[in-house]
Amino acid sequence: MMLRKSIVCLLSVMLLAALWFAGAGSEPRKAEAAPAFAKGADISWVAGMEAQGYKWKDKNGVQRDILDILKNDYQINSARIRVWVNPSSDYGNGYLNKDRAAALAKRAKAAGMSVMLTLHYSDSWADPGKQTKPAAWAGYTFQQLMDAVWNWTRDVMTTMQANGVTPDWVQIGNETNNGMLWEDGKASANMKNYAWLVNTGNNAVKSISSGTKTIVHLANGYDNSLFVWNIGGLVANGATFDMIGMSLYPSASDWSTKVTQTIANANDMIARYGKPIMITEIGMDYNQPAAAKSFIADIKTKIRNLSGGRGAGVFYWEPEATPGYNGGYGKGAWQSDGKPTAALEGFLN
Image (cartoon, rainbow, N blue to C red; front, side, top):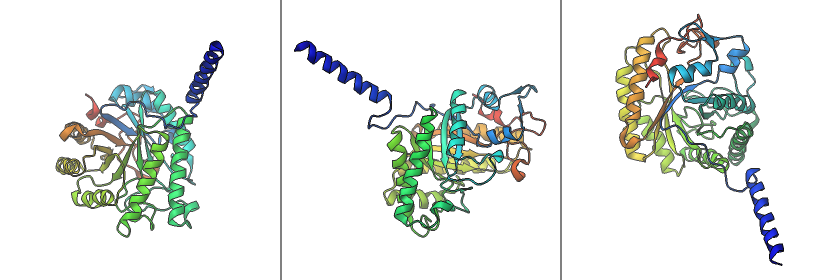
């Protein structure tokens, strides 16, 4: 009888272990440890550029994999990747659905990078001037819209995990200065709806990966009144999220002033809400590499030294872009000859 009980107990333990390792347990997975300070790059155009025949060289003119150059030459330890719901535009231009984004994330992880996802909740660009619902969600009631946010967010997360990637950070929306999923989630019209959508996205991420940090990301990191209104409105309406993200795109002539204003805003956000700060997008004209290098070095150092150690990192937006890529983007960090500018040297050390 004792032997039979022992065998039954052993089999039970083995079954539970099998279920756990198969991912069948009820507990959400935890993200792998994020870097203490993220030095990052948004690489969302990489696969599309490669499909178009682009190749990159290092500063010595040697052709290498772009992720290898970013990580080993410029100490980039994290990759930011955007995800659209049902993009209709050409993949060659880097418009990523969940499967293409997961393939790029898998590649970034294999290169030794941590991963941030930017969920646009749109079929195209979501930014301060437009937050257009995916076409498939256009006629939804608000409850159906929240259900769609929940289901799609979980779908993206499970697709990532099926590719061996558990993101360290996920943005719930992109540059949501006036909310998301307009008109229902427009913050100036209905802050509560905006907060509920953020909550839904946050909870969906946490249901898959409890350790992944969620981010609310606004443009114009120097604009304290915007952040007090938006982030304060979310908090007042019960929104749950982990971090505050900021964009900053100064010029070669005003970057020092804009950094000073952004750091003051970041410290104010920390004092008010106690949340870490991530600069999730920066950039400067490619033809001002010396100023860009100084800008990156300065904001990197000052974010790292934010009060309470709450500066989490800085990401450059699409440094792999060559001058004029994709209809005129001019803030990349690679030249038309395939070699980098000096800008990313600001990330060193």
